[in-house]
Image 1 (cartoon, rainbow, N blue to C red):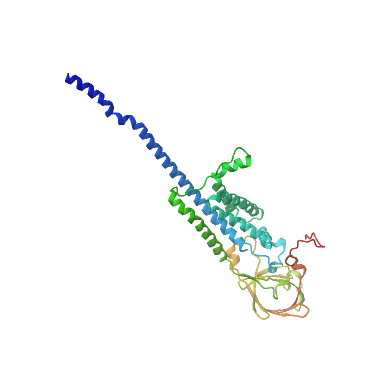
Image 2 (spheres, helix red, strand yellow):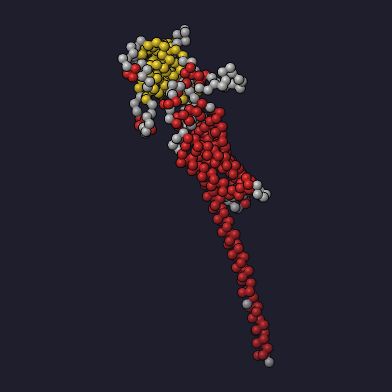
Length: 370
């Protein structure tokens, strides 16, 4: 009886000893789900970090080029010292540079769009706006680079691609916005740090660091260009040779007398632009500096030739001229020195581009297109 009673008890107890094995599938499922959530969180976080690296690089590029335009450094400003070069002598890139330089407003607004796009890329909630503006701005830059044969065509194309890469997380929302299919849901927010307590700290420090970076870029770019000022005193302006004591050459192609000279009024550091046209048609360019009362020092060199390397052009010898200037009562200038003895008269037609200015009203000669 005792043995027969023990056996049923042992058999009855056996299910209890096996009970943990019955719950094992649920524990494994929970563990698998947890690992999956952690794996997904790690993947998403790494993805946002990669995304953040791309947008940081793009932001720095956009802020750099934008700052260069905001300080009117990339294209400079239009100056009478560049007045003698003709359209046929310009390269396509030179034509673009002069066109943009002539309008500080156009240059500033272009810089504002690029700098603002870069700044927006540094804030989590304005990333899609910055990427969209950046893509639009770089698309215009690419068109200009292609149309005017500027050497940085490939970089501008790369910046467009980077802008589109940054936009990828918001592409479905943009598609619904443009195509009008369904409700536009809340967009994703870049999350570099998934741990909420630390994220609260970075959410505060991030914008501060972004603003500091923007200020640093703007300051650094501004330091790349020499200080600029304006000096409209003599001899600034465009001048034609009215009198010359030198005898003309037998052939016009051999005549090196001066026919016109343009002195700039924009000082970059201590120098301004100057251009000199000779009677044989050759144009030389360079800089000049006021060295004293009625004296100027010119540094002249030929125009850069097509296909000439930049280094070779910058290293070529320049010709230095020291001239004495005397203003006459009739407004002309008597120029002497370095074998020159001539009289310069203001060339009103040669300075129309710089003298006309802007007006909201209608002028008697509008439209004026020549």
